[in-house]
Amino acid sequence: LLLWHGDVPQSTTLLSTAQATSVCPEAVSEEPAALGTDKPTASWCWLPRSTAQLLSHGFCFANSVMEVCIFFLCAMIFLPGIAASVHPVQAFLHHTVYLSCYFPNSQKFDVKDLIIFWQKESNKVLHEVYHGQEKRDNLSPEYINRTKVDMGKWTLQLLNAGVEDEGLYQCIIQKIVEQSKEVVHQSECSLRIIANYSQPEIAELHSGELKPNGYLNLSCSSSGGYPEPKEMTWLISHENITHSSTAHMDISQDAVTKLYNVTSKLNIPVPTKSRTNISCLLHLREQLGSLVSVPLGIEIQEKEMEQAKINLFGPLIAVVVLITSALLLGFVILKKNSNILSTNQSVSLAV
Image 1 (spheres, rainbow, N blue to C red):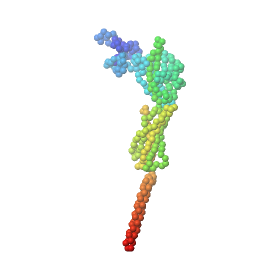
Image 2 (cartoon, one colour):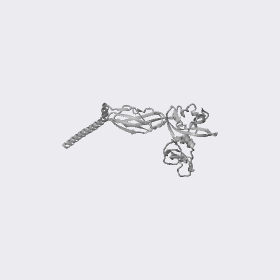
Image 3 (tube, rainbow, N blue to C red):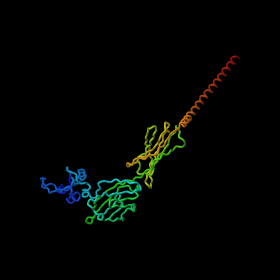
Image 4 (tube, rainbow, N blue to C red):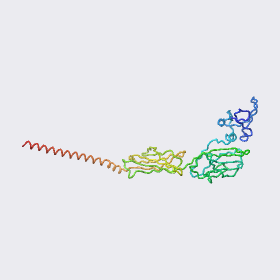
């Protein structure tokens, strides 16, 4: 794929031989004269096919040729100030964030000839370097005394990062050309803050001893994390079998720190078959994995099981005995009354 600067379509932006040579001298050549046309000699810089397709807005067209010149070097000429992509950056809460300009400086600019500044979302200036000197006149208040610059690496350090620092950052590099500013490089970083959640902790909500015919009420909580987690899962294990259950998760956010606290509840019949281990699992976002609680072991003793049976069947037996006794007593009374009635009838007949 070629970038031409000779006789090309009017819609094509031209690249001079001098420009191409400054970027990739080994890739610049003259078009062979024996093409059978009257066109003037043209020079070109090789680009990968995918790059030329991306740069097809007015100055590239496709041809099947070797790939020599790295895209970002040529893009320094054709697309000054245009960021190729947004670079994702993650940092832990209260740690230092490194915001790089991703500036190759292929043209070997002296920092004293440049204006470099970092800004957030186009309206908050973090740091400015003006012709090699740090300038603090235009800084946003929230970034004063929170930044350090390493011009050897074209990187800005943002100290003590907080949740409120999340967002899109731009590094813009300009130079003065004929008393006007020209953007020679621009890059963007998207910052995400991470705060570690505490290990999930299970608490028993029921009061008193567990009864085999009762219910188990549990809660699982984790606090002080960011961003908001995906979900919380309960794991119930007994006899080498594990069942999972995803329950509703209550989420609250601290108004000051912006950190999240989460809680989930579980209500199940008390396990009676064998020892049961119950854990809760907090699933995090941003490919941060999961956090698991210390297992809670539930085991009902045999004595408690027997006592539970007594407690369950004792009253039932008592009711049965009481009903049986009442029936027997009624039968006896009825029999006695029947005998008395028979005797009275016999006496009456004799008279």
